Image (tube, rainbow, N blue to C red; front, side, top):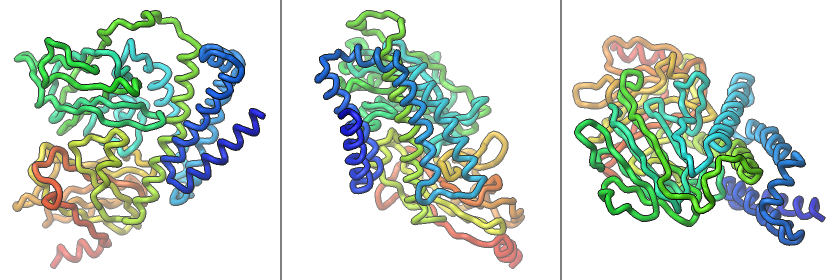
Length: 436
């Protein structure tokens, strides 16, 4: 009976997946499975701890984790994914990186009573992990929190151009994704003369905390995250903010550090949903971006916010595809804004290797024309246009991938927001145009 019910729920969820949309379907599978577990538990008179202990001791939790890793490989066959050996190899490397990231985030850094800021998506790590068009100009850090508790974040300002803090309801790999609850930048906050500051997170503001240094959390759902974005002009030459977070609410269940079967079972379940769900979602995005290949339309802001995107950023996500002798020419006039950047990614929405190649440009590294506009040329080799002011970005021997343009904290929006303009030209045509 258990197997029949499991199969029925799986089939129903898959039907929902294709009828209602991929992201909703993934959540439907998770919700259906959990409902089945609750039904079975109530039928047998088992407590939640009993279930978790049986799953760990029997090896079922581990088997499901391993099965999820194997199943995640199906994303490499999704419609729109390149099937050539090079892109497939990058896809499997991408999955291996997400396995590392999932274990780090959900197994090693998942205790909301002892939160730790962890930088998962970071291309400067000795062993990089990348996803979701990670910006080369950003240091992303996150910490698991419980929305019912109060936390204190202490730090030093450092030199990033933008230092932003956001509280989220939900969690990577959770049923409902991440919903932004509150967001502020360091410019909104009180900072001491020596560059130190404190920020409080919780459902209610502590009396001694100024409004500017408080971030609201939700008690329902209790699962939550703190997301920190540090944005740099020249990342390798600047000093990151140094941050520490601590829970200052006494836990009603005590503060034992003993690992429980419930904690490990939950952690492995969250990790497997992240490992399978994140690449599926971004592969679905990449396939959609191919509908406006080599263009840069404005991305849906509500969708961006629903997956933890910065509400102060206007994103232009798309797909690029070029032959070896072609170039993508991007022209734009940046609006008055705190920061802007453009980057190249592979098909899997991983930023290209910015440790060794010029694959991104920003407000502080761009070459500007006299009228304040910019030209970006994307190609395999630099066309060396001596009479043109432009910034060249390397495809690093890729012929296709995704790309992202960002206006960060622009002073204009809506119809006044400038959009980048693009065109594809042959390298020979670019050189001939310059010669005339």
